[in-house]
Length: 115
Length: 110
Image (cartoon, rainbow over all chains, first blue to last red):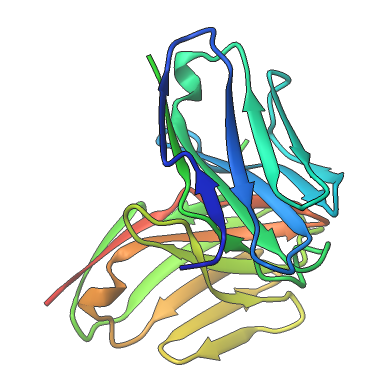
């Protein structure tokens, strides 16, 4: 158990809908990262927040957005969902800002299925 | 464009054998090269990592070999065990941008 929690575990929705994925980082961790894992694209970095502020952006679509709240939990919002958004979404957390100096701990993931 | 190229896609090794997974990159700005292990239904977990100023790092049965001039790095798993059966991802970072390889599914046969 990494100490990172993600809810829900599974999510099934329809195209065009909007969903929110939630992540609670390990106690004391200030950085939260979001990743998408799909069969055709592999594991892709989406976005990083550190202590409430966006600090790095990867291959995140404009239809997706995230935020980190004062209690450090984070939410990933996915809107206008398409079939291709079906994937596993992982959250990871680390103590510090620099990803090359702070080990990331991954949560168990949320499996999103868009029908 | 795949920033980190990983091979092979799958690997079958006998128990006690050596598993070798290779990765290559182009971006010389990358400054950290971690390897992750992922079991089915779980998130990836950091296995071992190396920085470009070191050519080799060993932790137990796991070794990273790093060739800066060739822009290649590899994971060697010595005395492979059935419990090592998992998917392995290499990665490279520049700043806080993370790029992952496509993964290698390792099966260790008893």
